[in-house]
Image (cartoon, rainbow, N blue to C red):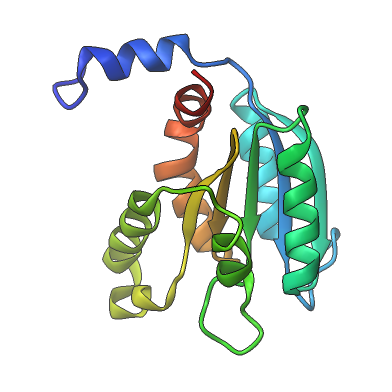
Length: 173
């Protein structure tokens, strides 16, 4: 047992489901499924770690579209987690954060805080421009990452993949 983890964290991870059913949403005005490197990385990383992809979409960063898709996925019993990328900055077209936070029943502020801390180590003060956020809609986990491939790799490797099973377990126990 790692000295950083309590026995209860290990027990919860052991009791967590082996495979999480995920929906992946890329929010971009320019990407297509063929050019979506960040979405492809998320899907590949999930599959390599035993998770399944229940749905995948690339759509413009539009609040109504985001709200409609995410609400539908959250109501689907075949989806445990929704992972988005793109639209988390502060540019005029970046509306993902605003659309998603309005839907969340519970926020996991630690995700955004840790993501920005880790980003700061790589890109410095520009990390503050990220509005990466996570939380839950009902019993579905929602994780919103920036669209850049480096940001997605950081979030997936350091935060999402190590805790995704545990997050779903905690929400559904």
